[in-house]
Structures are given as C-alpha cells and as structure tokens.
Length: 337
Ligand code: UD1
Image (cartoon, rainbow, N blue to C red):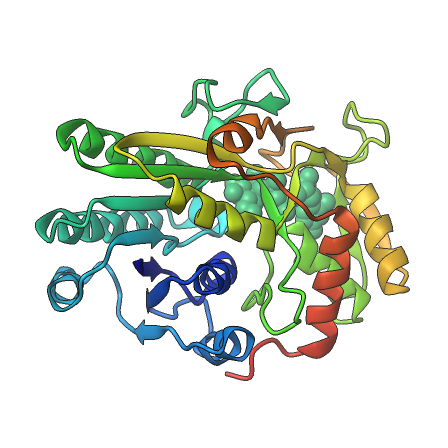
C-alpha cells in the first residue's frame, strides 16, 4: 500500500515507518519538523534501504495539505502529527487545541475530498481519564476527568473520527490508544530524542545515566503499590509500531478502537532498577512529592488487539532498557541534524 505518515520523523512515527517498509509498503511523510529532526529520514534509509519521501509543511496549511492529496494517490493515512507535551498543554491550551484539532480537520478534509478512506489515529490511554479501575478495556467510558488539554485534544479527535465514520459508510478508521512507549530500534539508529526538557520518565532516566542530569526525581513513594511508586504499562516502541502494521492489515469499514499495551504493570522503581542493571550505571534518585494528575496504577487489557488484530507484544522491560541504552550510547547528542 501507499501510506502517508503524518509526524513521521517523530519517535513513534519513525519506528512505524521502519515496520511499514519491512512489510512492503511505500511510505510518504508529512512533518513540520517542529519537534523532530530531518536526520531521521536518512537513519530510516540506513535500516531499511529505502528512503521515505518527506514533505515539510504544517498540516494546518489547508492548501498545502489538499495539494499533497491531489498530487498523490494514498491508500491509507497514519496520523501521528501533533503537539504532545502534557505540561506545556496546561500552559498553552489554545495552542494545543488550535494545532492538534485544525491540523486533523485539514487532513480529514483532504482525505474525504480525495476518496482516501483508511485512517489509523495515534491516540493515548490518557483518554480514559481518571477511573476507579486499573486495568483498562476499550469498553470503559472515556473522556471524563482527563487531566490536561493535550489528552482532551486526543479525545476530541477520537470523537470527530467516529462522527465522520457514522456519516461515511466506506470510512475505515482505527484508533490506537497507546500506553507508555519506551525503548528504541535495536539497531540504535532511531530512538527517542527529546528536544529540550523531557516530559516522560525514560528520557530522564537516560539523562541521569549519562551524567547529563544529576539525579532523577521520583514523583511520590506513598502510592498504594508494592514499592509505593506508580505503576505503568511500558511498551517497546517497536512492538507498538508493529501494532500499526497489524491494524492496517485488518482495516475494515467503521471505527475500531484498540489498546496497545503489554498488559503488564511495572513500577517506576522497577524500571529504574532494571535500567541500572542493564546499563551498569547507578541511577541516583530522590523521592519527591506526587505529580499532579498522576494515577497510582494503570495498564492495558490488550486482549482485543490480540484477538482481532493478531498482535501482542514480544519484547520485555529488559529489551526496552537495553535498546534505549544502546541508542543513547550510539547517539549521545541525538540526531546530527
Ligand atoms: C504521560 C501523560 C499522558 C501521555 C503520556 C505520553 C500525564 C499525567 N500523563 O503519561 O497523558 O499520553 O505521558 O507518553 O502526564 N515520573 C517520575 N519522575 C520523572 C518523570 C516521571 O517519577 O521525572 C513518573 C510519573 O510520576 C509517572 C511515571 O513516572 O508515575 C510515568 O510518567 P510519564 O513517563 O510522564 O508517563 P505518564 O504520566 O504515565
């Protein structure tokens, strides 16, 4: 298939492109490079032997988006592009609503106008909001008590996609709700490369391991878990990427929602200790107060994706730590450009 990947130079997008190419798909990328490096493209070529075509513009530009669809014939779109820093979204809510919603509307318009009716959307387990369960199934009601504007944009886009599906019988939409992606491609050529202050746990751990940061602050050790730290469902980014290939293969009319997670909860402290033993580096950490909006524990029930998409994770927490460390050692300064 000829696939358009939006946000394809980002962390999850780039790993997904590698898996798409490995499965025989042709890939084009649209990205405004707001939070990523163009150097990702040559790394993808190094791994796969194929260079995806990159279009550098912002999807909010309706004309450019429409022209891209007029000049190409895409069979499907995988939509990753969007702003994703939780803390920043609290400070700049309008920027998040404007960017994430308008870019998606522009993309969906171009798809419908050009009869491209197959979409995979990069969503987040954050759309479940705060619930009284820890193991999340897709049947849980979503959208209540989402703790930040970033998460609400994901939920709003999900709803938008469902409405479009209801109005267009031939529209095939798959919404993938990610848990906590970490790790890197095992080649060490691509990985997570946060520009500026990281937002998530794993980049902080690696920065302490390399000495870039003196210590890790662990937000809370008084949660009702075995070691008092929060538990999350970490998923290897390559497993996650393969979930998109599986979803594409099984795409069918209607809107389908799947959790992509391992189903196994791991505590923050367990992850730190595993990373430390794999890298051979001691990770200095200090417990501090809880972070606002954090839940003690949540993890996926991934059985729907296994049953319907024939997909499940293959990689362990050890793999995630090893591949992250390998990427870090090979690329101490991230991508060259
Ligand atoms: C966060 C977002 C979620 C988003 C996801 C994207 C919140 C509340 N949720 O999930 O909306 O989709 O990232 O990847 O922000 N931690 C520390 N010290 C640190 C950093 C993190 O102790 O320096 C802890 C956190 O308190 C949490 C765990 O590590 O318990 C995981 O944090 P993080 O990587 O930010 O992911 P989530 O909060 O689960």
